Length: 493
Image 1 (cartoon, rainbow, N blue to C red):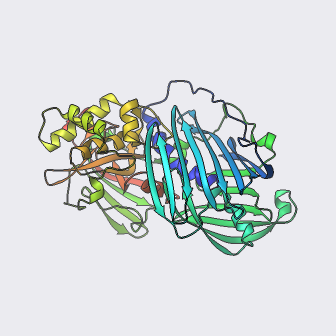
Image 2 (spheres, rainbow, N blue to C red; image 1 turned 30 degrees about the horizontal axis):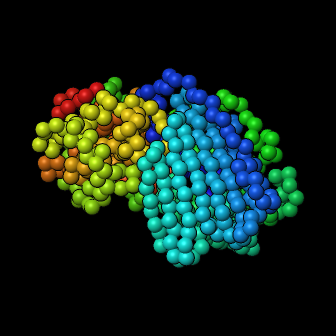
Image 3 (cartoon, rainbow, N blue to C red; image 1 turned 120 degrees about the vertical axis):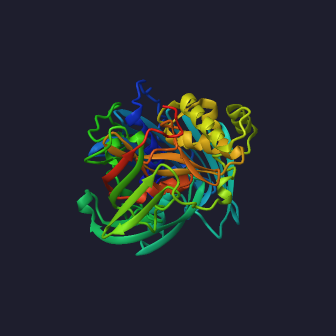
């Protein structure tokens, strides 16, 4: 899924910061980052190089480059992608770099990559054996590792154009790939939509129009007969074009992008309550959500179908004793390190001598709201990193809440959905924990417990699940009714 394939993963990370920017406008100046030359590998003869300008809303926001060199045992691939994403009136810098060794058939041998933004940095590496794919990731100093059994060769998404051409430009091609940002791998399906005249793109020869998808996520590519990416288009208004090196690497240090990602990812409503945090009941009519894809029924939420739309009701308090607790609700994971002694120590310090489960959760919620600075971070959320740096957006708050609660043996999961802020819904995360025989909601970012009903839960889980939000092409929400009640058992705002 090429450059935009990586961009889809990055967007899942920055999505939460876009919502936070509405509440907490950044006041600090973004420091200019010194970008290394695109050719970070200088050994071996260049076999191909591809430079891409990345555009959003018709304005240039960054570039990416790919340089392929012939090595002694195969090919060396170096990639650099740099973007300034317009978020809440500021340009959020995101830099990613990758160096990979691949075989002559483009199959992956090993790679190293980095993603950095706003002072946070994630570094990772991976390599293949005959039977396994081993991935290692280090997020702000916290290492994690995963192993996957594989039944054959595996490829980088950015090499799909080369793979397609070397496979004879078929009508359909399935490519097993690895996504280092989410420590996952899976198959990408490439379908040829048509063959277009290269004159349309000011080049000679045919250009192959491809539809590339993994699950419900997709992008469109235009590839020439040499495997060069000519153009790529993804949902949300992002478009990339092949450009001469000088043009691709040159763009304003402060792009005057007219369209903010906030407006792209927000869902405006015509009528809204004065203080959404006091809403105890909400009924909406929504269009654009598939109940077969999204988790629209929960302990405090239900829906009914009405023609092509859904009527969704949300309650502050539980209305039914679902869903069942699963092992993942108490698990210590790569990014939610509930079993780490530092997390356990912090949790015990926060709750003190408290033994009542619900009061423990309220203490965690209050501590996070009061002690974690509300700052957008385009990085992979990691509980230990948040505990150390004491800053982050809603995903960082929710991730650390999960780790602290699970370290105390309390089932907790991250809730993913939209929350009402002023006169629009924004994508957001909060948490649900099991106590006193039922689930209860907490929002450590906004400082409310139980979480108000001015929100709609769509999914649950970590980053790998949250990427599924990109399945939503267009969402419409109308508020039909609401009730307000300030007598929640705590509001720390």
